[in-house]
Amino acid sequence: MIIHRAHKIKLTKLSSQQKSYLLTSAGASRFAYNWGLAEWKKRYEDYTQGKTKTPPNAYDLRKLFNARKKIENPSHYDELTWEQQREYFHWVTNVSKCIPQQALINLGTAYQRFFKKTAKAPRFKLKGKDDSFYVDNENAKIIKKEVNGTTCFYLSLPKIDNDFLLTEEPRFQGKLLSVTVSRHGESWYAALSYELEIPDPVVDKKRATTKIGIDLGIKHFAVMVDHGEVTFEEEGPKALKRLLGRLRLLNRRLSKKVKQSRNFEKAKLKISSLHFRISNIRKDFQHKLSTDIVQHYHQVGMETLNVKGMLKNHKLSRHISDAGWYQFKMMIKYKLSARGGILVEADQFFASTKTMSCCDVKLEHVTLSDRTLTCPSCGIVHDRDINSARNLRDIG
Image (cartoon, rainbow, N blue to C red; front, side, top):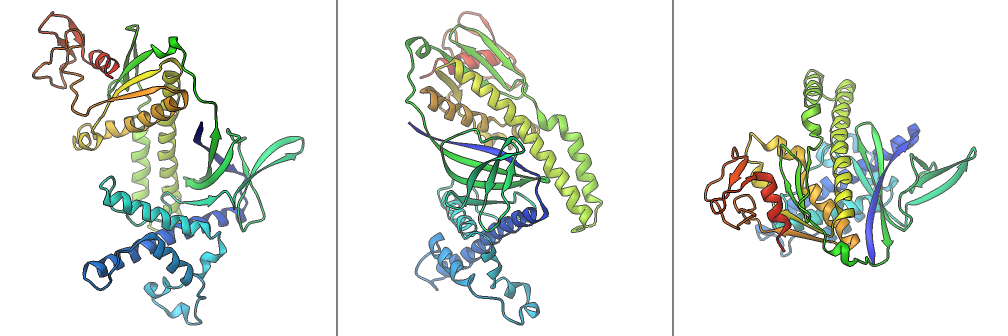
């Protein structure tokens, strides 16, 4: 069985040369993406007006980019306007060719998702926000070295002699597919993507009968009921709520800085670092909880939440975003698949809350303030979330 896994590791003890290399590579990736987006919009406008016969595509943009990057800057380059200078980008040849190429491929993928109505239209990338670049396995390697009696692991990237020291040993020992280097706050990280071959999962009879229903919420991140009627309640870290005061303070300080100044850039990095910390707190909790669930249960029942629609409720939108329900469901899904488990997703219109788990009777009106529900058939009083978890456990 072939699976894909990724491990994000921090790059440490960076020299000034290495930092400059990372910034240049991320800048080349961002420039190629923004150049391609501007060219795509221009070509699409010509296509809709009948000036050209074919719509824009990523392949043509890559060919054009490769041709233009070979043109060196003219002698009067400094006298050109900003728009004219953008037509000359010989400097991108200082980085690996796969970096701008992958950026243009990502742009094509973004437009495919947009046309399928699964994502919004691509937008221009901003400097200092989500700086990253991609390197394929032909240009990136993991090197093991002995330094002063200690085993260290390094990341080798193209067009730079100094290897990048990793803070830990890569978690997986399969085929390295690619490396995505990204910046979060003041730190740089390498996401190593691997292809692994593992034995096909074998599910014994005892495990095959285990199942659990999970009701996701705000007060409790997850309320769960398993096949033995054992109930679990997980509060969740609520990282954004805990650090919201600190985030607001940093944003106020940023608003008082002179734009584009060094202090302004330092303040932006502090905000970025805090956002990354909030994300890590949330991911750490969800990884631990999802792993614990998958280790003990073969079938997991969850509801299909319309998160996009729920975010329109401005009173709850911040709490919903802080919960990260979709990310948690994806963790459950890929971890179950590796173990041969089953994720059963209820239909979006399945009334898991209104349906009584005891008699299968559906209530007419239930509000958010109703925390307990009484079955009109047998009179049993149910906790709202536990009743929903039971219904999700029994679907499929």
